[in-house]
Length: 367
Ligand code: TTP
Ligand code: MG
Image (tube, rainbow, N blue to C red; front, side):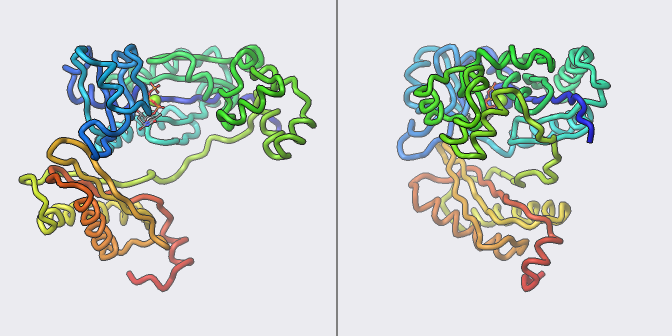
């Protein structure tokens, strides 16, 4: 196949969980907003999932312990909220649906990122990208109400790095002839696959920037990191990446969440609500013709902290009895780990496989 210049885009939604919270409560917009996972051991134990840009000015970011975030935001009128994945997935689904319409090929990666191959849409012309992106941005602002940052390049690797350059609501376009100049000065850990340890090892070899890595002898890289990684590092540093943009096919999970009539620790009442959610989830899964291997539950407790438990099954199933039984066991576990009453309950299935494959693999599974 003759290699043709591709135009590839990465869309990364801005401060996503916190932006979703601003979307349903615009009064939050000017305040520091921190979305966190509360581990529940003590009131402030847990970590920051993400924070809006107002909070980031105070040094609050993903992964920071919540008690430190509270300390940094003391007196700043900050708002702390528990993660509400079901809501963020709704917002994400709307965005992804709209984005898909702008792409020749579309690949969602995670809840807030997607690659778009827009080669045909812009006729291979990088100069036409800016107008297209502006249209996309205002379309999604109108339809959903959120902003995102965009990186564009001749492949996924460059698009991904470019998307990180300007945030929020950013756009960075790297034309094929500018790839070397763009990558060269960046620290080597900007490449996917170069973590802290690898970066340290490269540092010992005198490799600090992507440009250093691009110029480093590929045979020596292979000798040090092995054939697969060595060649990957060499190509990546030179901006070479032929990975296609590929549709993933299925959403990664299906989940439902609901508020109980009153806060409770009574398993029967919790399961009454959970069973309603389970039926909706099962209907959804049946429509999509998927089996699932992972089952999870979550609960928002009286103090608004969120807790979750999940289990991976030996084999994929679509048996509602298995789902019910597992959900009940998970809620039992969750309750025994806390003294608090539950306010909202959530159920989730994930790790999907297509039914057709499933039937071939485990034809003994009963309908
Ligand atoms: P990111 O895209 O890495 O971060 P972001 O969207 O919050 O911010 P940015 O504007 O820099 O893109 O992650 C997407 C979501 O994933 C984020 O909103 C929350 C979640 N997340 C976590 O829960 N824990 C983490 O450590 C990270 C990095 C993200
Ligand atoms: Mg993001």
